[in-house]
Length: 508
Image 1 (cartoon, helix red, strand yellow):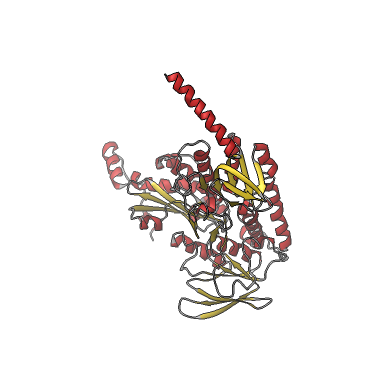
Image 2 (cartoon, rainbow, N blue to C red):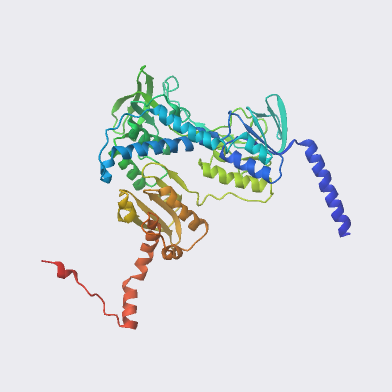
């Protein structure tokens, strides 16, 4: 009986597979060639799934490669080097009379970095993996089929990974005034003499500091009462303090009333928190006021995939309201980071190809704002813990007390470690040199559920900035190990004699 049932099961499976492939051209179709889409395509194709990847632009890589992470970090590095050259006397070196920046040379370098990475994200590479790549703007005609360049493609599963685009808010006059977004700012013919940045989020502050260091007069306007609204106030204010010291001008708690094109200059009329009206003028305006999900033109309304201005609605397995259609990356409306998109790509592959019900977990999703110094975070910060009603304790260490940090002339910043009422770490924030790299150790600790005592006991090479991770953990344990109770206990059992020196000896 078992053999007959087994044979019939396999026959049924074979017939289903035959019907399956007769109905669908592909096992899985992916719309969007950014971080999420490329991760899913590579994974699915290498596992043997017949895979289609569709990208609307002329090249793969998405916003991150062409208009986001890669060009911004390349620009930031150029600005950092130029800033160090201008402040060489901080390192005991002679000052140099530097010529102005030729932005075309910076743009050329940005393009060369992108071209190098592009080779890894080429159509040929994905074809070699077994995936078909097609270019154009698709739209669904039903739940399993879409039209692209006059052809119809059918897939058993679809993934929407179309990313996001910069939002242009409905500010009077803005649409009629030439302005920059992340798609233009890295490819300018020359460095603007002055720039007004609308928005004090990560993109606004990163570009604000970079352009100021390159020689642009920068003003940043935001309606919030702090920059980097997702971060704790003290950490955000520390970033603002560094940027203000370098000459960036901030107008916070300011409403933008209108924008006007004056020809060679642009005007932004604002109203400050105290009711004062000001007209700000600059050569360029850079809009960094958030991102919107790329959902238009796909025909999602026709096929019952729910979405709003924030993105496509998904469950924790990243399935849309059509369970065979997934969404990942920025378009899913969650964490708008390239590494988050890559992580979500892995979740989709597990569910759609392996058919293993894996859920996304963002508890320890790290992020970093690449100012100088950078500000990195993982897990909960104080603001989040307070909103969640969690009892916590806070432990900090200053970078000015780290020997390597002092040697490198980096004295600004601190690390904050947050412990819950069970004295387990639930979050870490780092504002200081190499903050993003320092988070790597905490990624392993928090995700691996490593005991804090393991970190405190681990040997770190000296002198390294990474020692600050060990030190903040050690500070927590020091309060226990060197307590009066422990000292009394040791004195009782081992007859320890106590202090060998008194500060009174140094008084005059």
